[in-house]
Amino acid sequence: MWSWPAAAPRLGLVRIGGPPQRSAQRAHTWPRYRAANNALYVVVLGRLRYDPRTKAYAARRTTDGLSKPEIIRCLKRYVVREIYNALQAINPPKTSTDAA
Image (tube, rainbow, N blue to C red; front, side, top):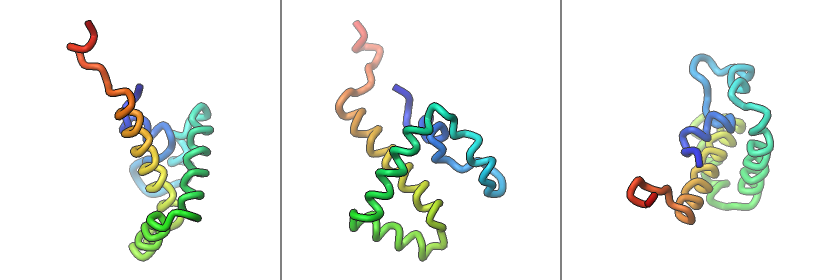
């Protein structure tokens, strides 16, 4: 299983350095990860609509000056982190002493 930091760029959740440009940001969203990115987007939209904690977070970040796409990108990162941690709890990584 890949690590959470390695997953973020593949899913298009990390801004590429330099000035914000849509074409540069899309450069890391490879076609094979498009379905995963779409699933994250649907989850985040559902949370924005129904989850009070997410609504409060979005309101707070809006007052901080973030745009809606930036807020959605941050929320997608949070969802990936939650999923990764849940998967790690179910199936912890094997260490060298475990492989015997």
